[in-house]
Image (cartoon, rainbow, N blue to C red; front, top):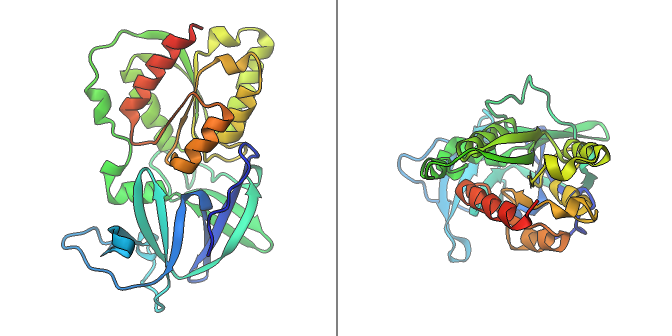
Length: 301
């Protein structure tokens, strides 16, 4: 199946690959997918996490295989199924699924954010739900799944501990991040780095509304010195937010950093086209602080 579908940047749309585990339907952002392969035998790894089936090497690249059924508390399937080969946070990982249904182009506005009963600060395996015809497609949080199996693949918070003693900065940073867990980690890290003035938003739309409010008040450049945005967010994604910010003569003066697990070569090109001032993948939390320091100093606002 061809997953190399290049959407126009900043349209607030995404491609979702629908797949099945038994009678349940799930989704993954096509931007995370490298390819889809028929099941092939894997080599077990001693003392591996129970959700890790093992490793295999298509085209001389070693890839770990994660059994999604086990991750979701389901028994192993009877059919061999398929491997969805993904790339995010600079990792190549195969997810073992039963069946691939197809690809749907949807707007982020159509994605329903799970409420706090199933998506609290402790993390969740779902980032959103799409209602399509008579079924619900649950978009899984693959970063959270991988981080739960191998915590060192998440934010490298130890990088912040290695920073030298820093004075408190008066600069205010506006953040758009939909994951409660990641939002807390990012804000904790920024506070350790001396950035205590933070405006935290749960999606791009909320962040854009706040930016517009401050602009109308006439205090935007005094109130915000840097913007950090994720890419994958309900209501409005980070690319759409970047496009809106960099298309406005006043707002574009504020440095904007895309901080996302999806920053790969293709996504980096999109971000550059939209005017992002820096782009970093989520494990690079220490580099995020360096980028903010540099961009705020260079902007002069």
